[in-house]
Image (cartoon, rainbow, N blue to C red; front, side, top):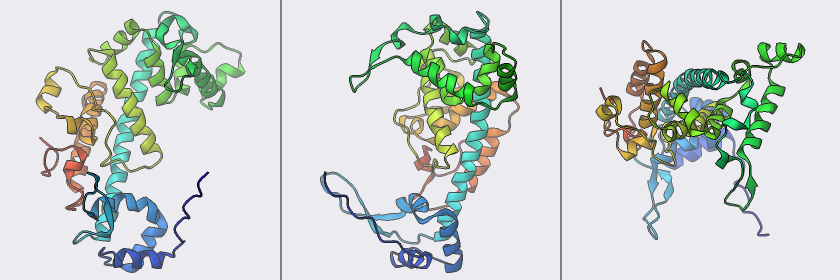
Length: 315
C-alpha cells in the first residue's frame, strides 16, 4: 500500500486570515473574518470561494486552479454567498417536505385500497426488481433490501401513531406506516412498484410517465440529503438532466440542458409539484426574492445555477 500524503499543517484562525489575504482576498475586518472562520470553518467556506481562485493554464485539456484569488474577491461577499446558500437550502427543504408528505399520502391511498397491509406484499413489486446483478456482479433483491430498511425505520420510529400500534399489538395499515418513512424509503418503494401502480400515482400529480417521477424523486432525495447535512447547493450540478415533458408549464419555461442539470431546473420542477399541492403557495415568490438578494460576485454568476443570464429570476 502506498504511503498517504501527509495532511496540511494546522493553522490558527489568525494564520488562516493572513493566508487568505496573502493570496489576494480582500479582508475588510480581520476580527470578523477570524470569528466567521471559527463559526463556519475554513474548509467549509473554501467551497464557496473556490470559483474565485485564478486559473492555471490548461494542461492536457484539464483546467486547474491556483491558490491565489481573482481581482476584487471580498471575504464579506463570500460570507453573504454562504448565507444565501443557507436560505436556499431552507426553502428547498420547505418544498421537499410538502412534496414528501403529499406523495406518501398518494402512495398509501392508491396502494392501501387493495389491502391495508399491501406494503408487505411482493405482488405489487416489479418482478425485475426481485433478482438482478449489479455492476459488481452481486445478486441483489431490491424488495428484500427495501423491506429491511422499512422494518428498521418502523423499529426506530418514535411517532406516536407507530408506537401506539406496536404497544397495543395492532397491525399497522399503510396510512400509518408511511409516517415512519423518509424520502428515500418512499422513493425506493415507488421505484419498486409495477408500472400500472406507478401510473396511478403519477396521475395524481399530472405526470404522464412513471420514469419522470422516478428520476425526479431520485434527484430530489439527493438534494434533500445535501440540505439535511448543510452541504452547499447553489451551484451544484446533477449527474443527469432532469426530465420534463410536453406541457404548457414546461413549454413556456423552455428549459435547456444546462438549466435541467442545475438548481434553476430543480426549482422549476419543485414548483410544478408544490403548486399542485398548494395553488396559493408563496414559495416561488420567496425563491425569486432570494435570488434577487444573491451577492454580485463576478466568478459566482447566476448562470452557475442554470439561469440563461445574470438578470435575476426569469418572469
